[in-house]
View 1 (cartoon, helix red, strand yellow):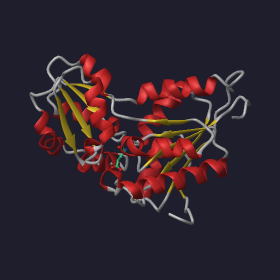
View 2: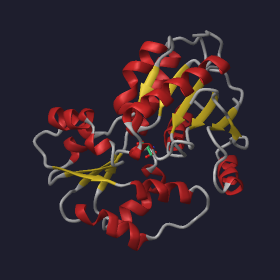
View 3: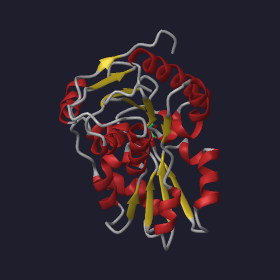
Length: 268
Ligand code: DGL
């Protein structure tokens, strides 16, 4: 790690979901340099073959870390984190922080039951089932995997409106069964208000964003003399041209990002 007052944080996801994690990190560390990479060419990760996902994430992230000399990587994707962290940590010499479903804090809060809303892949992962076994405190956990919810968050960030009746029908299996739900996909905090409304307004929603931001801050500041007060740079890369690019760039500009650039890896 460099000991200068500014560090470079690489945030990675399949799509715009990792921006929910970026926002939490940026709240705590507003003056860092940020790189955001999304692998939209292979989106949605929730339906991607595991081996393909592991290979792509390793190659893309390692190449960008090398090219930009990043100081820390945040895999802001539950679907990827549940399987890629060991190989990525073995490959890189900088800290790699992952995001996994917040089963433990949700279970501590719940009195009736916990819902886990995630991608179709995350709800089947062994890692997720071990989290439930170890941390659900005996509370019943209802699993709900949906790619449509991920798409809805992508649409919202391109200025489209979310249909509450559609959300209600997707979330129906959780209605009246849980009092706490885990947003186990980083796309979902982007549609948190809508999910809250569709669940009847009385379910507490929990995600991992803030905890991840605290972890990143602790890792970075342990190595820094003092934090710079200058505005950092914010660059965003996609593995393929994004759909509705203009609408997306409008939203990204509000978060301080330059327009999306395409990053082509020679080998993925
Ligand atoms: N944002 C991702 C997650 O946290 C995955 C979305 C997808 O590509 O399926 O799981």
